[in-house]
Length: 107
Ligand code: FES
Image 1 (tube, rainbow, N blue to C red):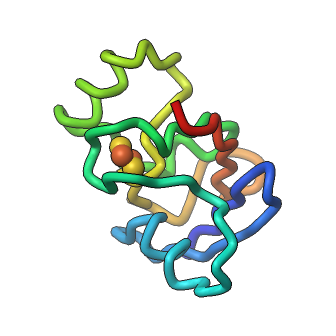
Image 2 (tube, helix red, strand yellow):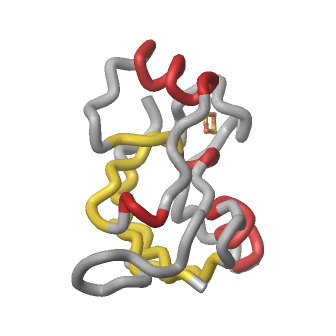
Image 3 (cartoon, helix red, strand yellow):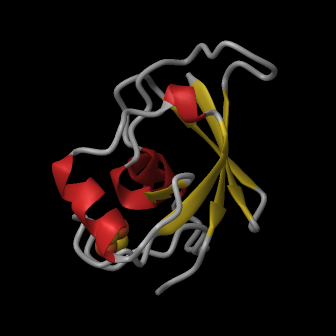
């Protein structure tokens, strides 16, 4: 399991290797929006986040996500939150099981 913290809400979710972070966020079921989404399919960039820690635990962007990131001129530390998958639950430094994401906000 990897722990994923979503800021600024300060909410943590646990994600199995291979699991999608958005699924873990949805499973919380408290109705609180901690990751804004619209299309859920790498079309709109509503879910843009900054990866503040744990990049090595995330699957790299596929061609579709990469295209949207380029279209919105995302910085190198930004990803589409709806597309993020955990590939590993062990990192190489610091808190080895933590990903920290900052919601950039709907664009
Ligand atoms: S919700 Fe549209 S790209 Fe993620």
